[in-house]
Amino acid sequence: MADTGKIAKNLERFAQAVASHDRENPTHTAHGIGLAHFDMERLGFDEGEEILPGITIHADSGVTGNFRVLCDGEHDEDLVEAEQETVEAVATQAVPVSSPGQPPFEEQ
Image (tube, rainbow, N blue to C red; front, side, top):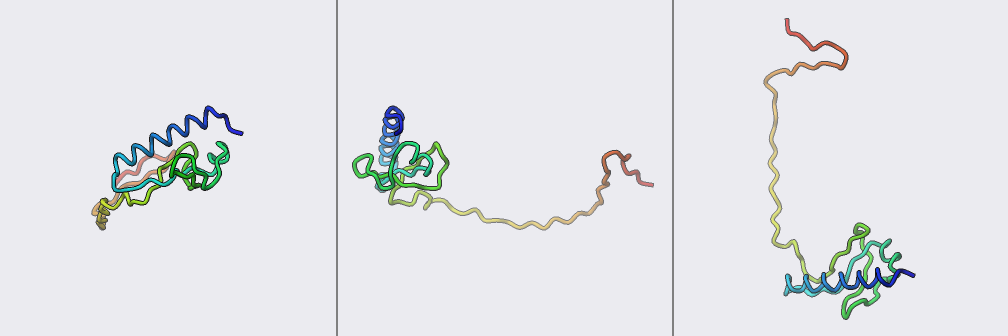
């Protein structure tokens, strides 16, 4: 069983994160917390367990030690993909090459 102090601190952080998310994204509804599977086992949470009113725990592929608020909105809908520009590089001069332990190339 996990230390109750650790669980209490995590529940407090989860509540703060959900409140912050809901304040910053009023059109999105938070429904869960995503944790790495290792953290779920370490803290003793089960998949789908309700930890706060309306907030359940879900395993995700996140980094251990981190969590994320899961919601019904798309947070990256305003991001615009940057266009990639292809540039063809053509050398107009030769660059001398030397190997370690050999004297530099000298032109004659």
